[in-house]
Every structure is written in C-alpha cells, then in structure tokens.
Length: 312
Image 1 (cartoon, helix red, strand yellow):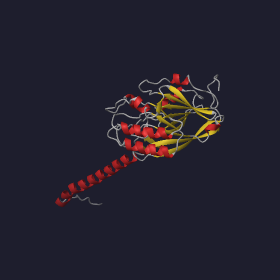
Image 2: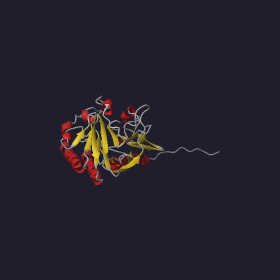
Image 3: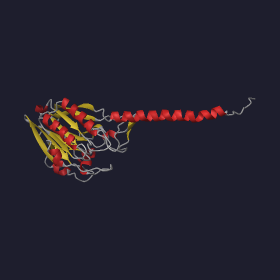
Image 4: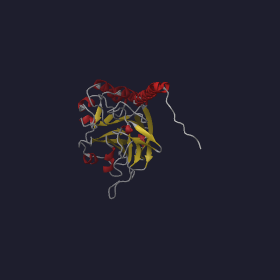
C-alpha cells in the first residue's frame, strides 16, 4: 500500500501566495484592457459591403446604377467615437461614387456633433446626382432605452440636402426607367403608416421600388411584389456578438428576427439589414464591424409576382 503523506506549507510558500495572486490579477487586467481597446478600435473599423441589386427587365436604363445605404450614425451619443466612424463611412460611400444614397434612420441622439453631422450629410448630397433620401429612427424621435436621448430636428437634416420620407414615396427618373423610394417612419413609437406608402406605389414594370425603414419587421406587413427590396437598420448587427460554433449570438437583441445581412422573407420579398455605422449605450463593437452597403443595380430580373388576385 502507498503511504499518504501530509503536505505542510512552509512560511516561504505562504509569503508567495499574495505575490502570485497579484501576478494573476495583473495578467487578467491586462487581458481585459487589451480586449476593451480592441472593441473600441473595431467600432471604428468601418467596412464596405458590395451587393447586387436586381432591377426589372423593363428598367434597362438602371443597369450599372450604384446605390449606397448608410444607417445608425448615432451622432451625439456619449461616450462614443461615432462622429469619427461617420466620417469614415461617408469617405467609403463617396469612394463608391454613388448615384443614389439611402439612409435608414438614427441620424443623431443628442446635440453634440450635429454641426459635423450636417457637414457629412452635405458631402453625401453634393456627390449623389440622384439625391439622398432617408427615414427617421426611434432615436431621432427621442425614443430609446439609452439615457439623455434628444429628438433630431428633421429640418436640420433636410437643410443638408437629405429628403426625409415621412410615410411617403419619392421617384427619380433614369432614362425611361424609374427608381421609387418608399419611406416608413419609426415603428417603435407608432409613427409609421405603411398603407399610405403602399397607396402611392408606381407598379409599372419599368420601376424599381425600394422600401426604407428603420425596423426590418415592417417587411412582414408588405405583400410579394410591393417592393424589389427593403432596406433597414436598427440592430447594429448585434454590436457586441459572441462567436459561438455555427452561429453568432447578438447581445443587442437576442430575439431579433432579422439581425443583419440579406434575407428572402418569402414570395421574393428581399430584405437587407445593415449593421450601421455608430454605436449605442457602449462605444464598443465585438465581432461586428460597422459597415456601409453598396448596391450595384443589374437590370434584367423578372418582375416580382404580385399577391394573388392583384395586377402585376
């Protein structure tokens, strides 16, 4: 049989325990600091996402059109580096030489930095020959869980050349084809009126119809054939995500039905939810870089089927 011997701690061993504990704590503090610094840096690491956007075959004049989507600047939120990220996002958008710029809400949430935001919006409007269009988000109406959020002045946005679509549509002509943009106001605060947008849709086969909404779930209230694509923001793509095997967990909204990226909602209803540019609550991102989206229009797609009994 083996004889078990009791281990006796020597006084020198006891003296080394606090020193080892302090070393371990120092390593953990350093790792936490590095992780925090990375998440701040990622919040500024704005990426460009390029995607194809199919236009109807009868809208051949739209072929080659470039459309940029930006969202969720959250200028005025403190603490954050959102203004810096916004400048980077605008630089990326302008480098794409967009014909049309679309903004899907949450321009600002406080007075800080709004003059600079206006300057960036003017840069966009001065470089997009077909114009800049947008809708408001919940922060723009002062509706938020974040503290000290203040409503955005729509006139301050529109004075920069951005046309805000308040449950309305706007059309731009490109040769014999048309791009019609429908804008639904914030749904969280009950400012939305989708039926008013649907009532003014131009359903001719030469029209590319795009829906702008801050909240993606609006697309569930549309019918196949209403829009060729819906663009949304709001989720920040999770902002801080956990990269688990096979999927990412989005901490901003664990139950978001449309978290980020491209979706086919059914019946040809296409949706893209952007991660947006800025941050909210915490000035951090993890495994979720901010982004702008550049759509390259390719004409020649068949017209989406309308709902049963409705004219195409």
